[in-house]
Image (cartoon, rainbow, N blue to C red; front, top):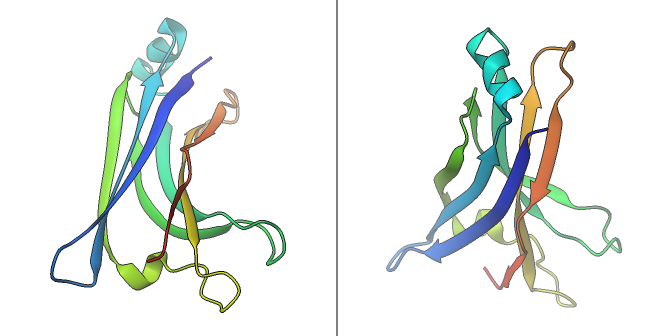
Length: 130
């Protein structure tokens, strides 16, 4: 079965602006059988999402942004980038908790019901006050 390895998230503040650069990456390893199926029409997509981690006191984790989707990935390290306003990353904004925790979630899925591949991995969380 396909594997997703070494998920990483990096957030860099853009100097002199209210913008931040998001870079998320993950290693994709496909089996020879999956590569054969792709060569014969199987569609796979790799999706990268930015999530806000919540402790449960304020509900579950929240989707912040879809960073990108790639159809039919190959075995390689895939990197997604996006520039966003810093305010989009400010997911905890209260007098009790202003510390933001973010992570990237990568999901590899088949678009064919006959081959139900669905693999998800999360990056380590990044904590900061955006």
